[in-house]
Length: 320
Ligand SMILES: Nc1nc2c(c(=O)[nH]1)N[C@H]1C(S)=C(S)[C@@H](COP(=O)(O)O)O[C@H]1N2
Ligand SMILES: [Mo]
Image (cartoon, rainbow, N blue to C red; front, side):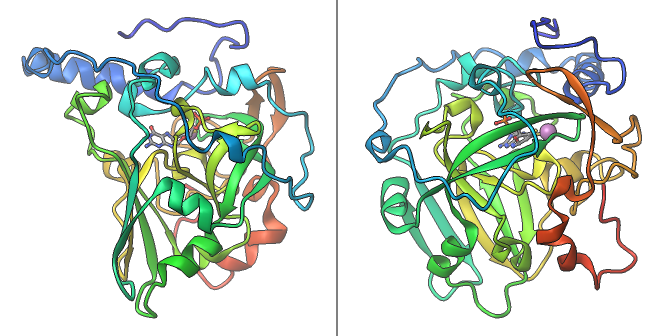
């Protein structure tokens, strides 16, 4: 369970302690001490049923030329086999396990401070949204990065559909909860379900993207099918996968990682090379695929799009 398999593209982790290995080892030891880990076992993993994806014919989406990269695309094989998706376990090799997630039918509940709560099926949503492809960089808080073609739609378009009330200040996203298919959700010391959040202003920013596909095809399950968020100027943990609920609220959402460790993972989590994580530097990142060590950019290089969002905010940790 805790064996870390090295793959060709992984360099020895000397600068950044991989978050999952560090954290999980600690928690597992604690749980074993309490004699309770064994009680969490005994579920049979769900059979990996390969259902056909009814949205496949929609792809590829037309690429929006506005979003350009400063580096080559990361090979697809790496993006699909080096994942963070704690619902399926704390290491990077969860692609196989994630195939157990049923992604049809899949509905998203929209509720909270909206004109009228509703649920919508993922295929209805795809029919209503302006679909496009964008090339974005993605920077994990663990100091690795990828550059990928996401398919999806602007979150601003989703907000027009959701119709939040003026009183809504935040949008809260929630991942599915089903310990029968997601063995990581039997690790009871994590605050399931995975929750993330953003301000409405962040959601309206043109970069905020709801993703349904990758490399011109429907999103692989391990990358967060059938619907995930991507906020490319923030650390990757904000980009919540496999969303089932989007709620509007006037209170800042309590997010998964900030519940686990508020000193290490804040709400804003904007990328900044000058603000180290408590346990490692954020000055550089390891580019998956090339293994090049490249300097990290403030706002992950997207400052022209987003820096203004934070101009008025004082006394808060914007970069953590
Ligand atoms: N539901 C959920 N969403 C999640 C995570 C997770 O564990 N569960 N991990 C996050 C982290 S830390 C990163 S870096 C990205 C990784 O996305 P990728 O596997 O598609 O590269 O997903 C984010 N979204
Ligand atoms: Mo991450």
